[in-house]
Length: 394
Image 1 (spheres, helix red, strand yellow):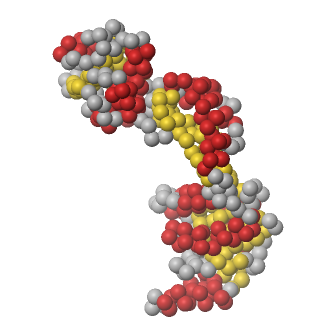
Image 2 (cartoon, rainbow, N blue to C red):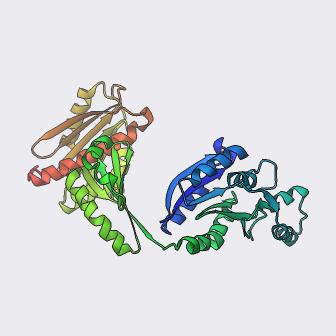
C-alpha cells in the first residue's frame, strides 16, 4: 500500500489569509484508492525550505504531492524547489509553452513574458497537461517514489487529480478502490481520558482504527475500517463496535446520527412518559435541543429571573412539579453563582436525584457542556426509572 505526504505551498496559507481545502480534498480522494496519508504540511513561498521539506518527505513516503506555487510570478517557487530537491536542472519545455499559448489564444488573450516561467520544469519530469488553467503540472520520478506538483487553484487541482494523477498512480502502484467505512459511537458524562484508559488497546489497532474526539460533555469514538467491499469493512468493524459497547456500557448513548435528544424521545415515547423540564441560564437552548427529538409529551418552562441561590432554584423546581402533571421532571440551572457549575435535579414518582457538576473548560462552552450533561442525566434517569418500575405512579 503506497504512502503519501501532501505539501501545500503559499505564504498566504501560513498567514491565514486563505484556507487550505486542497489537502483535505486530496487526502479524502486518495484514501479511497488505498493510499495511506502520513503527513500534511504547509510551507511558505521559500524555495530552499520547500526543497528541504520535499527531500524529507521522500525519505518517508512513496508519493509527495505539492499544490500551489506554479504561477508565473517570481514568488511562485515550486518548480525551482522540486528541481533542487531532486538534484535536477530546470529546462524549458516547448510543448508546455505551446499549451500555454493555446490557452491564452482560446480566451483571446496575450501571454506576458513572465508566463514563459511556467514552461520550465525539472529535467526529465513527466509533463501533465492542464486544460483548465495556465499552470502546467509535472511529475518527477525518484526511484520508486515520485513528486507530483499540482496547481493551487482548487478547480484546476481537482480536475487534474482525477483526469491525470489517479490514472498515473493506479498504473504505477496498482491501486485498488477501497471502501472506507466509519462508524461513530457517542458517549456522554465520561471523560476522554477515562475512555482512553478503558479502550487503549483498541486504539492501537491498524485496521480498523479507533480514535477519540472530545466535545464539551460528550466524546465521539470513531471506528474506521478499510476494505475492498462494504461487507468486508462491516465484518472488520462490527466486532470492535460490539466490544466498545460492552466496555463502555450505558456511557454510550447512540451511534452515527443518533442524538441525545432523539434517544430520550425514543425512550419516553415508547414508554408513554410525560416529561417536564425547568431550565435556567440556557436561554431555552436545552428545551430546543430536547424538542428536536420530537417527544410526544413535553412540558417545558424557562426561568428568566435569576434565583438568589441554588436553594431558591430547587424550591422553584419543586413548585413547578406540583403545577405540572408529568411522570419525570428535570430541573437544570447553570451559573447561578457565576462559578461554571451546573445543578441538575430529576424527579420521578418515587424519588428525586440531584447532581452538581463543575466545568473546567472555556466559559463560552458552558452552555453546550451543560446541555449535553443535562440531556444525558435525563437519559440515564429514564433508563433507571424504567428498570426499577418507578414511572407511572403519580
